Amino acid sequence: MTNKIIDKLAWIELKNKSILSTKSYGKDKYYIPGGKREDGETDEQALIREISEELSVTIDPKTLNYVGTFEAQAHSHAEGILVKMTCYSGEYSGELQANSEIEEVKWLRYSDKDKISEVDKIIFDYLHNNNLLD
Image 1 (cartoon, rainbow, N blue to C red):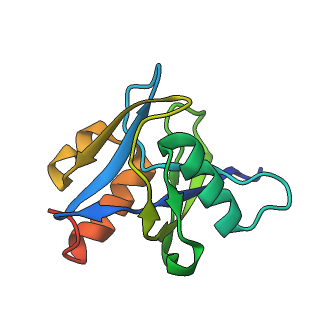
Image 2 (image 1 turned 30 degrees about the vertical axis):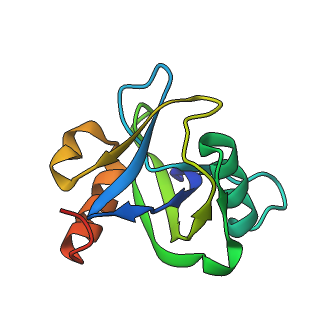
């Protein structure tokens, strides 16, 4: 049996060693912002579209920087369904505000790991180990 993989993109936005996270309506966890690509979209196109929809800001494609790809059990999905997060950082213009399905935008620290999904915990560990997240 092959594992099902949910292929997602995430935007790593760090400030003062905290990370931008979002919570959707009806969810109990915070997530690093991003989402799934649509047919034919590149990583860059999908990430820019998702962030624009969720947070009302525009990422500058020239500043996109690959951070890493992380995999874990998908939160609130059946055992064996994995989420693969391909993460990029990048500069943005505009003002961050919750939009579409996003209820709340919050800057989280490493001590907030109990509030996030499994794959985000791996990303938090990576950022913390690289001295980017307190």
